[in-house]
Image (cartoon, rainbow, N blue to C red; front, side, top):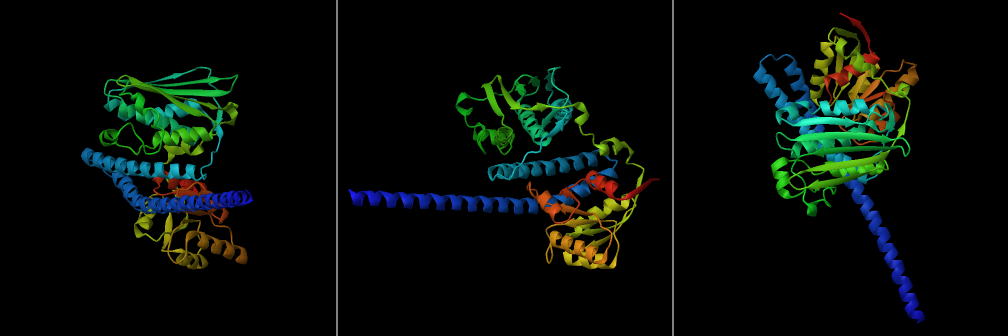
Length: 408
């Protein structure tokens, strides 16, 4: 009996060791996957910066409707590719625990309007009636992660439009229970519907109703999975009711605290958007990027607004040029050979401290898209962050913040 007891004890110890090792292996596998996805994101986003950026510049000077239509197709195709990689990265960030929420005062009435506007062209082309049913008691201001909640609504509306045939209808519904402080939303459509046998798996990663769905309608099958996981992070949940051939209703509830309207953030850049046309900026900046086409693209934008610039191919060149010249701002790529952007930033900050030079704004321009990247750049001494592929508007907003301007 004693021998049996020792045997069981040692077997249990072996089992514990095996479970601990399995946990370590799973953690290593998760980190390896995250690193791979981050690298893949960088490799895709870098060339897409050149493609989408130069198409945007070419389209500005084009008057031929057919050429403009072709440019629009290229842009939409590139954005579709980016949305796919973003879905994969989002799922990876959530599963690895690196996704964080940033609740802030949010105007949900405006959020719903802005989201629906994104689908105006598509619903017109499909002759779909999309309307809102927003309870008038829904507070003007609620504390929620605006970006991630909008992502959920976008996913639900996108699916509804995708699976609703021409002539159908879609409704976006929202209400708020002031007693329980629960926000309730729903997206209902008259689309294809979902069979009962498939309802269980539609929230699982990479799963769609059947393989023919992917062939007929496209998509990664990650939208509902990400939406479900995001709502879970918000302490909410999502459900579905559907009848094959009659349509579906996806409804969610999430605890949300109301706030004062005066707490709402107003983006001053949006107020200035219509006044950009005659903007002339004054400044000399340094563009640091190991890809020549990225230097050319950023230079094209800078020259339009009267900004002069020097170019550096890596961090070593950037530090050398900084020692010799004075710059009003530095656009710093992060992933470069010889010396990366973070190390170059640290050396520049060291030079400033050593020689009592005025601090130069350094803007990270990077294809890395993991949630902790922005904080990593700020911790290294950078002042701002724009992600590749960037738009002219994103660059302009940074320039307006850091450079002097005058009206031409």
